[in-house]
Image 1: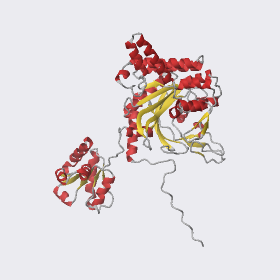
Image 2: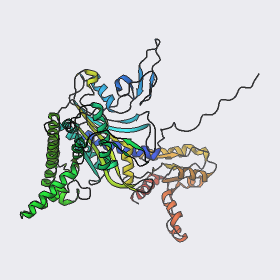
Image 3: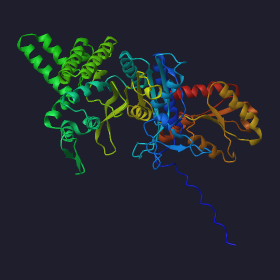
Image 4: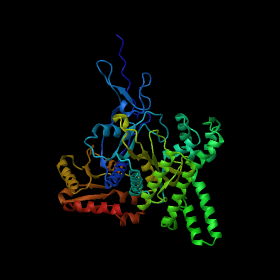
Length: 546
């Protein structure tokens, strides 16, 4: 009889596109989400935790077919006796589940319904550097409010959130646009085909990457990319391309108009007016927008916003939908300016289009404007960390009736990376105080010590490995990044004392100090057993202040 082969051992590796998160990262994320939740709660939003699994039909965006049931999402079919079980999928965002929740429970929920949600989402897409198939999102949405005051509120809340977690004013900008305005521009150039419009949207979305020249080429016949490959263009004529570019690149056009106005005012001797027009001209320039002269000049901010909206008004011609979009942007701007959110914090930006097709009105994006170095050592701006907009048709899929909704989603991992870049958080976890074991027969004494520490609010543990080698216990404490070790051998027990070792100071002394300094600055202290809590707390407070 042939000998059966042993089954191969499984590989100890994460699936492709997934990763593990350890102590420091998990703690950092939890602390940041707590701050974000505090802002959302202050704005009157309630928490919602919906199911991680939805029917594919409810998700709507990726309907499975017979050959490719997993396209876009992680999906599977329920095992049913008749073979007709529902297709289920892990949620790919937190917005589609909200639409289902509201449709299902709308009779029990207040209208408008304001909710925030935080948690992992999953996408069955090709992974890449920094791009994973599981990642965290943090959303806030208002369902059932048609007023653009809801959109303005989302923008102001997003601004407050960024500042609350540690992104200082001047290092971010929230950009706002309206899909209706762009639709109005496309209407005026005779673009009615939905597929062609979608191609134009995707092309405009590349403005930050390829610039005005690149977008012009892609809207036309096409262009060569960096690798030398030719990319086919949308095929618009020059006459059609120009209004689209004037829409996307409104900043340059408005700055040019303001410069001309300022020059004329100076010629007429209106020096104060010329200076104010100049301040308005630079209201959205990264190097100037947060300077006191501009940040505190409310009139200059109003001038800039008015000129941008007037420019958009000129571009949409007689388009009804375009006029409605500009009107909504004016209302949003007025509401934000009244609350102190000028274009140095939240500004109208026609280059923001957002990729998802379900946006129906205002769209917004939070961009971090400080520079970082990429993997090749080149300077670049950090970029977008949040985005959202109005989606009035999503709930309609369930109810048959249009339900207005607007919201924003924050990319948690990207925001955490930004905070690390700014030095607002450090990837360093402080471990527990370790009570070492000098005599395994006295475990009761050691457990009593650790209980005292925990009851005093101090994170602590007893060493539970093999206590035979004391050096291994200190190595364990070092690997745990423990701040303090507590030592009580037989002699200490007999004398009613404990040894308390400051592991942080000890490491610092060992690394930098001379022998004389080491003797003058001991890192181990003998104290009465009754002073255990007081001494440990004193050491921890000293480490926190260092």
